Amino acid sequence: MTSYLLKSLTKNPLSPSSPTLKSLLVSSLRSYAKASQKERVIVPEPEPEPERLDDVVPTSGISRPLSEILKELSKKVPDTLVKVRTEDGFSIKYIPWHIVNRIMNLHAPEWSGEVRSITYSADGKSVSVVYRVTLYGTDAEMYRESTGTALVEDTGYGDPVQKAEAMAFRRACARFGLGLHLYHEDML
Image 1 (tube, one colour):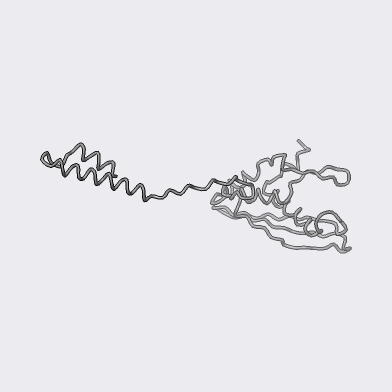
Image 2 (image 1 turned 90 degrees about the vertical axis):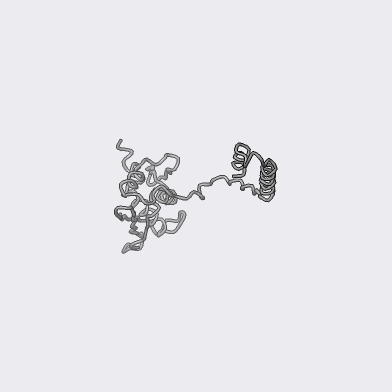
């Protein structure tokens, strides 16, 4: 603003007979401009920290119709996120539950999940978990349920209920299209 006033005063003098008034106004405006620059404290902004995967705030699914969310979930999951395990001599491809969770948070941050039931077999050798995943869109909500089963004797990582829950969770998400390509990849 001060530069505008200075320019207008030099182009349009107040009156031809008062050069003293003009010079007085110009000098006072210049001193005001210098004083205001000295009083201004400039605080440098901190350097942004490098973005980590843990710090990424999911936003792509917020306030979107279900059709858009389902379209994103149905996309092929990159091979780098897919793991392979061997059961009974067969190789099985799967996406770890924590990766499925991150993908859900990214594309459908309004999702919710719950264990619907935990049932042990009559002989006590296995446990089955029913898991429900619900998606919330701007136009509707929908849910899918699935089951997972684990042997009680399995001494691998985690307890049998955790394993069955992770399996049921992944399968329920697959019913929305997430990682569904892994189930029929061998047929293509």
